[in-house]
Image (tube, rainbow, N blue to C red; front, side, top):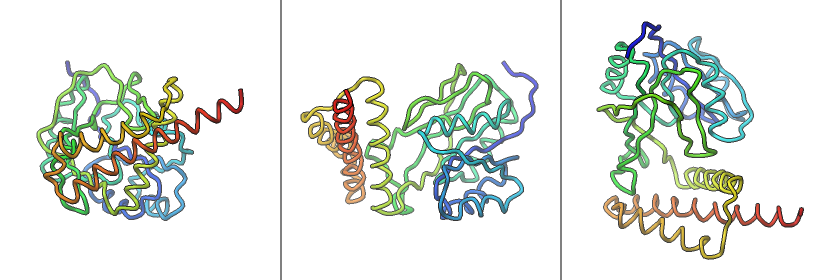
Length: 259
């Protein structure tokens, strides 16, 4: 069912120290009507760059978890079409045209998945489990839409879903150290999420789960076909799982000491 609603597109982005990505991203989003940035108190030139554009509304919000930041952004863009991107994602011409065609139809009861192509140092990765990577990025933002999860957050809505034909470019891997730091942050946030749900760590899980993750991504999900880059990515995915259990164990011990 379609309803007569304004077909304004608002791009939502959460940032932290994204000066290297922001100018290119703003240029890439020239087709949207407004860009809303929710910044996690960056210490670089993210704010300075953002405030140069009259199209951008810039907000600061102390980071708690990814869902909290995304929901804060959603609250700034109620009752409009929302295109939610990460700062390291890009839209090519074919995907842009597909987005504009969809929004013109104004089917506000449908949310749209984007398949993502992961890029390692500007070159595509085809396997490592990333071949099935997709997220809802385009949807009509009503009162009942929200995100859940500390990390790898998921959109909760009652809309039916469709998958776009064209692919979103994901320049996630810039260099080893920055990606390792990202995987470590994800692991820590996942530990807090598990802890709050009553999950517990163990010596067995601390070592077996990361090994399983590496073998699954590298052999079963064919990361081996991505060569050295695939091996690095699979290792870092496994490292994130290892960090999760190490930090979960610290949370357990801290709780034990205070009880």
